[in-house]
Image (cartoon, rainbow, N blue to C red; front, side, top):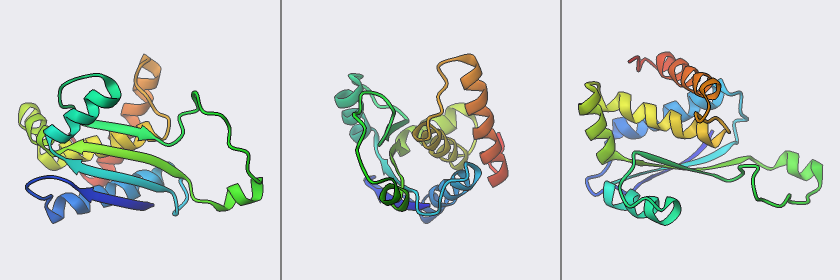
Length: 159
């Protein structure tokens, strides 16, 4: 996976947090059998920053834990006309994942598990959304959450 990782937190993400994000993105990409040059970005931020994004794009004026912006969601977008051979050579850009490290800490304490487990959960959750997985219907939820659990368990972040 070609990961762009941004740390916009005020306190600075730890090397362990950055490694966790990199490792889980790689593992999730391998699990979904994505090409090595598939692109994704992850930004770690604080509650204030994610609240502004949540308000601007979702109309919800409060911080959230994770927001994913897919480059292609198969809705509302006109198809891009491109030579199929050229298109096959270009890397796939999945989109952007934004995670509040403040929410990671809050939710880890509330759920009584490690911050690493919570951060890992949010990374994988956001990544699966970028790949078209959702949890609006019970069958879709079962599939998405099962895949999340599989990836987190494989990494050693069991619940």
